[in-house]
Image 1 (cartoon, rainbow, N blue to C red):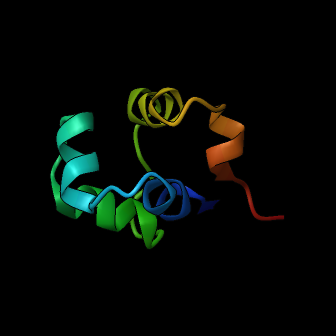
Image 2: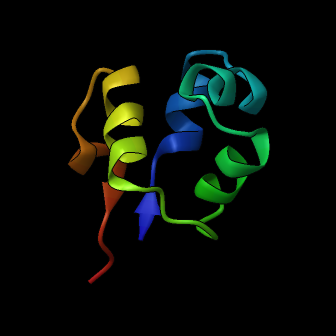
Image 3: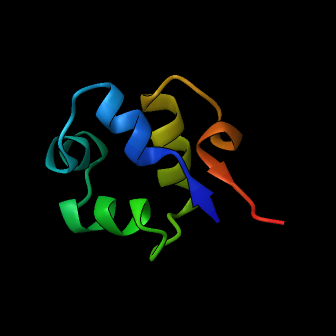
Length: 64
């Protein structure tokens, strides 16, 4: 599954640590999500989408 977390984060000028703090997770979790090594829980995925004021489908993309 691909995602646009890194692009959304950098567009806002946030570090991984700053986003992690806002989401209540570790910086390593954000790094793992951005690199595709970790799929977030549904509540975290929804939280990220709400934080970036978009939909979950716009943040996470199922590869065909």
